Image (cartoon, rainbow, N blue to C red; front, side, top):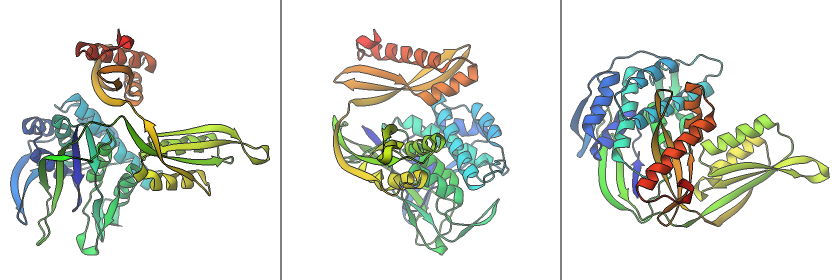
Length: 402
């Protein structure tokens, strides 16, 4: 497996992420084309940051603000791989959700993160990621800085509220700095790292470094290398089994809406699975057994979400449960319906060299179904048929796909 490991020991911003991915070997021409198609041709230079050779990217964009709808229209005209455009859309949806969470009741207008430079950086970073053709992503703790930062909403403490919300919801660990550090992780950088880390879980166990790179930030403070470091790692194939924690709690005083929202929050924060099972509790009261499957490193953070969202006073943790897992891959298929095309990921389960199960990713199927006005099950069926055909061509099909 090829795993991308981000090590933001001095923070992360959009331009730094583009730079480090280019340093790792991303397709420079495709990145330049993508960024130029939404704003202007970027300037890419090699700089020195306290003795470290790094790539610095300048989008050559102006300033301004845009609504989420305007941002999405700009992304749709990008000359970038379809998969990169879809990832970029998700990045800005994360930003929109964070802004709504921080400023409820206000109409969202992207300022710092919705200016043309941020749009160019996001589509550039997503294009770079796609061209690296990696299997997984891991993000080490992010240095967020300290002090205050001036924003369109006034002077705010670091990390900015939107940055904090993005890193919190993605379950990414942070490291706080001093007042002198200022803002080290921007909302754009946080949103990119959050989206990248949520794709395919990476692992650095038994890894071999195949490439390392550095992306330079705008500032060049003395004695501090203002760079984002990342590695491309070659790891052993995924094992057929691993260990997980099982988190459980019983609730009998929450509404269906609250329960559904809690499960959604848990999945967004990195839970492998989350479910609510009807049960009979003490004194004959009907309730639910809420069960969450988690990797051991995320159990503390997910337990806090369960407590806060459900109001429960106790959560049971069954640690290190051994489980069998099939080898899994994500294939991307291009679906054409009613003259419209859309890239939909399909998850494949493998036993040996044979794919025995395949399922289209629901959210992308739903989004395309809404755009063209047909049932989502029809979109999923077509995507899965295409997926089976493509796998069969490679000799990995099973009786399910014949």
